[in-house]
Image (cartoon, rainbow, N blue to C red; front, side, top):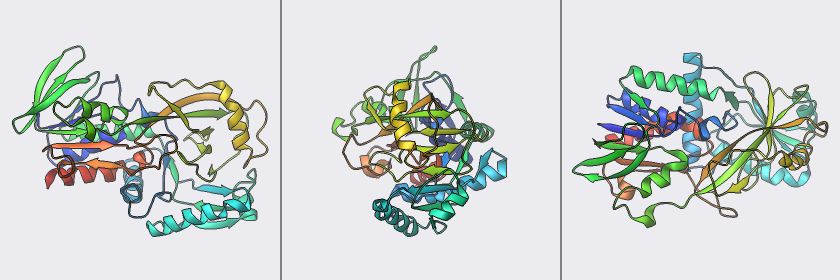
Length: 365
């Protein structure tokens, strides 16, 4: 094989597409039975504007550039999406400094559309929302993530790429100028591969730890933050996304709207040991009611129903600062022909096309 991309989530698919369009012979290996079954399918499906991240960070750069690229891509191909905008609400005066920090970061990162709204204008935008002050982001939107992934896969295959499902990697090692890779599944086999892009999401550090001879101390420690979602019964109250002021490990329990107009709330942050722990405990609704009612006091009792959960592949644990995205190429780890995509959580979906370009550029240099 010329180029192996491990992982068929949105970032892996975008990267495989970009490599195929650049003339590389690409195979995507996915351990699961379908594309995008983990983080890419278990999130808020939000197109982020790029307002939360430290200016100059990789996360800020790929989010801002990726958002522009993604909207163009979605419009040109007719992939379902909606630039509905969102409110980030401050429910008391003490939250204004945090909102000011968000506004300053957004401006420094090149997001010029964010604007302040007072309580009266916030009520005009969302009559059900109660707040003292808010920021409005018109460039935030939502996308049908599965339709996006199907589009990326289709373009990769049209350019000569191929997808192998139910194909885990059991072991791999350096061999000559490339790698010898052992594939499991129904038909185990070993292939020689020139280039490997590790886009395995949750499994990226585990995959790296299986590379024979790779220093164990260079494999990042991974933590898993489960995010639970609850859907809303009855009348749908919002036309825009509604976010609280962010918390340490996430963006808070926010209200998002899917392409059918249905409102769901989440994710919260639940640190777990098992990245396959995807069952939502209905008892967590109690904390959801309390959090949501800070900005939507009219939430009726009994209106929340346990829906789905996703797990963020984090490179930090509880109480630790949130690190940047990592796109580790040979200049960082010293292994020719290998790129590791590590800690690619939110805003990975928004950033996927920009991340893909960086991978292609890094392998070409």
